[in-house]
Length: 143
Image 1 (cartoon, rainbow, N blue to C red):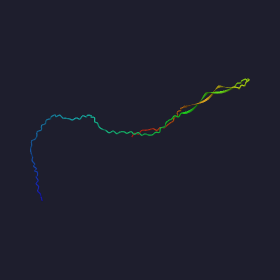
Image 2 (cartoon, one colour; image 1 turned 180 degrees about the vertical axis):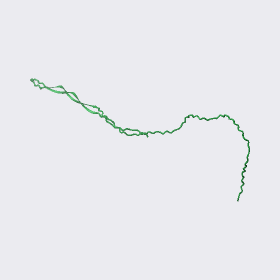
Image 3 (cartoon, helix red, strand yellow; image 1 turned 135 degrees about the horizontal axis):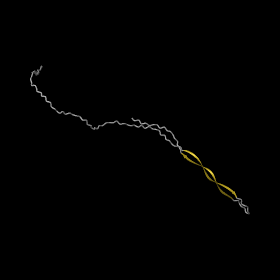
Image 4 (tube, one colour; image 1 turned 30 degrees about the vertical axis):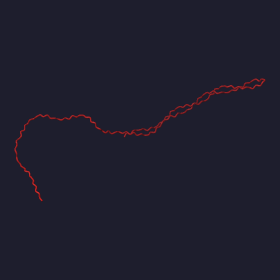
């Protein structure tokens, strides 16, 4: 089957038309011009900023501690001390003989004699002892 379709063809007309010439009047008018001027204004703006944090790591190093100990030195000093001693001197007394019999009597007399004696007095005298100890140096490393 064949169908028929009607199509409207446009008509192109070419025609010269006359018109009136416009009259141009020159008149200069002063018109204020609005200018936009930008003035910088300082504003305080709060802004959140992430600041990198520095972490300090201390490294503890065990250092052996050496102590200086003062050892007292003992010296013995001899001191002479006089101590009185007792000396016993026996004297025989002669008794004349009489009719009756007498027993000779012995008397004991004590006499004090000074005899030097030695006494030991110990005194502790501290003598400082110096030792040199090497201590290693500790350094901090910052990461």
